[in-house]
View 1 (cartoon, rainbow, N blue to C red):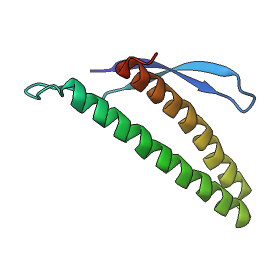
View 2: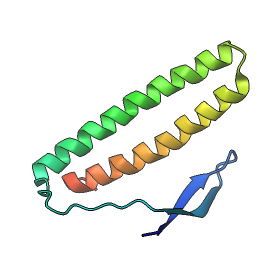
View 3: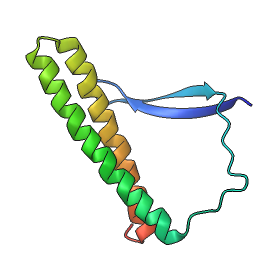
Length: 102
């Protein structure tokens, strides 16, 4: 089955743009037990910290690439870190909602 998703991204000037993304990814949870509220909270907390750790590693990679004279690649990784930050901000906002912290 083809799924259409609208994704938003920011360009190098900070302007937000939306585009559609089609994928044939099938995702089913048949027979899988739903995690408890406590498990969901723990998993979300873990994933946010895990993602932040990866963002920091990627930031360091961008600096290493720049030092190696690979400025275009460094810029692309830097952009990825920037977008990763936006994703982490959304995850943190969702986590706060789950915790009831708005």
